[in-house]
Length: 74
Image 1: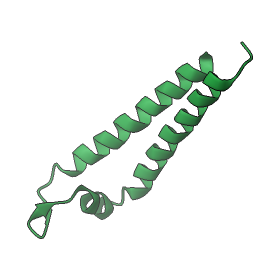
Image 2: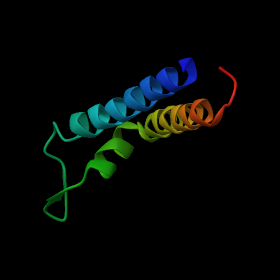
Image 3: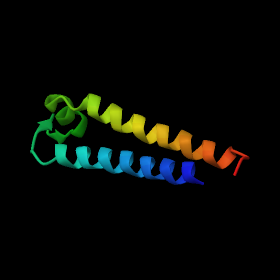
Image 4: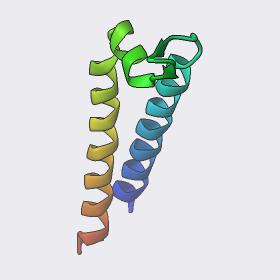
């Protein structure tokens, strides 16, 4: 049960962190061909490794939560 709770918290933290970086990148009005581009903004700030780390945290949390559900030992 502890693995499921920890994994769920890690998933939530990873997703919220990614959403926050995506929302923050659109604070400036940078455009590409007249359209807003969050990925271009994030790469201009050099935050793509941060997105990968947060996505990794969410994936590890998912694996941990799934492992906690499958684990037969209580």
